[in-house]
Image (cartoon, rainbow, N blue to C red; front, side, top):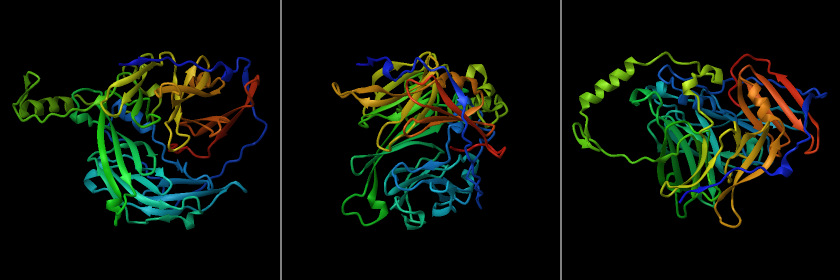
Length: 447
């Protein structure tokens, strides 16, 4: 039975006295670092013109911090040579060191290049790294001693294990270590427009569970075993998707609920659900769809570039808590009237937190287990004064992030401007604002 719960902000975390932000008096320094090989980035091809593809593409953040490493400040990325690179940062003098090659993974086959998206990495545990090659393959690489300097870390440089070949590009949304040896991964793929009967390709959320460090294993292939793989299907790219607090549920923010995909094998001319369709009919329909295609939209996503009919109507968005076992909806929370601002992973073993607009503010919520019922509930953990009003005015914003201790929030736009906002405390009438112009006109690929 579905339970219906609303979002109720904690009034003690709201600042009714806040009035405005003023330009800060401190000059914030910036530093530019050049690489021998640029960050691997693949723009959308002409075939991928839908709003769903544009939204998924725009949400990519190609710069990664290791949340397991509290000792070193290291930025990770993948360069065009298919190498995972580590870039150290020295807090003492505020400078970056030299990038170090951590490992390399196999280059995708040439026939996959046209379907390629940007590769990405994630850290599911303190001693492993997941690599999405951008063409459908998910690898796992040994990456131990990451609390040490880059030169002392123990990565398997070229020996890695193929966890799964999905046969189509996917976006790596989340990966979490549960208990000691089980890892839950969430990956998202989009249906090819040429195979779609509508202008809105279906979206798949793949829920992958694998076991690592199995007892008695002698090789990497034996130590990482896929336990289960399920696929939730939906009609649009979700505004938010995360495993629940105990991994028995999946939390999704979307207009319509996602449900498990039930595939049926249908031969040419075979009747299914009272209708028959031959291979010839399917080919003719596919041809009709290809003839109706339009030119691709720009790959740098902003709200102004989308047709009104394609935009996600946030008046209809709900938070769905879906049972990971049977796909039933356990809880619904409407977020009508609350603009979606951003989401962030604070710790690698907890659900992703999300920030939505309440009045003019941005309220940060964390999915937690209820102390009384053990069900999923929403905890108001922090407030960013006037963020809802501010972000609505930044029409070209691309990324929004906040500090680990909620001490600041930053908005990065497509024109390489960074807007940073700091609030002193809950009783302050004003806060500090800083504006940084990056010395480049290149597209921002991560933050």
